[in-house]
Image 1 (cartoon, helix red, strand yellow):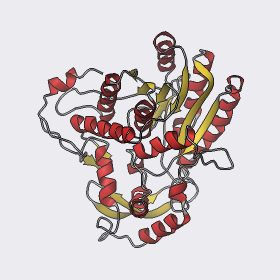
Image 2 (image 1 turned 90 degrees about the vertical axis):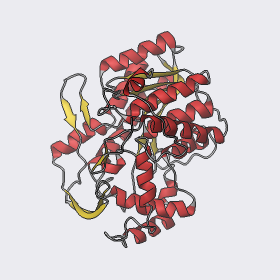
Image 3 (image 1 turned 135 degrees about the horizontal axis):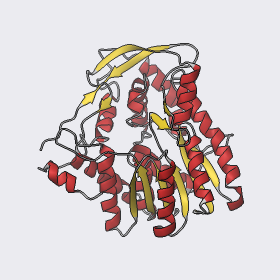
Length: 397
């Protein structure tokens, strides 16, 4: 069976299961090359199957020797035309590698927004995971969420607020540079986006875990945010996504109060711009990234998700190089925000057009490769093998 990369617009539809497996191994090798660091040994990661969540899990397991629980909603293979999702294979590859090293790597494939999922995880912690967790990482990314109490389903919108935004965008399927328009959101769309992508579910998870008494004394919970810069503020920080991130700040304060009696802490981590399935569909963001990546690569500061997350936990949260802002948020995005980096990125972006956006002037090829890696394509060290659909179906989850 041959695997073919298939992109519709900027959304990946195809998957290479063997490539996904190799990509996970590549990330594990990167973490191991950095050596061991001290961090919690019992970790729950909500949204663990790709990008930030997967990278966090790999870093903590193979860098700090942590047992991990991963929660994600993925789909397995049904036929040669429907091979499932990349996250399905990432979870399998991670579990196999972790168990070879004697680590616990439990995967829950479920709707993390539901009460049932929370209870299932709590029961596992109590009965099979030692009874407590030391670190809870919330890294869930979804465009839809069903409220577990009302049953109402909400859909998020990536839109501007106030005035529409007009600017350059890229269609990777057609390799096309064009001028795009982002319409302003309605009040309902803003509220729905906050409902889906804000901090409400994070707070519900922490309340459930606290009430079940499965949080250790001094527990830490982290949630990844992105604030961006003036170059992307009109469509990110100043748009619906920015409102959702602001809600996470509010919920962090609530969680800090909730955890006060066990000396726990909720930490917002403002991450840098990286290539994810989500970032590829944010209007205009690819243009920003191909300029930023070019500048940061030349400065030696560009990071993939595994590089970024490993630095966050190894050097900042459990190391001696933390950087906080006035709001108490951890700021590993300081390399992106460097004034020279931003000035050079803006200068480069202003020069882009349909004739030069994908040449050596930018990091388009780098962004495309990192995007492809998310689905198991263009993976370093990958060796093509023949495998049948029945063999894929037999992979133990």
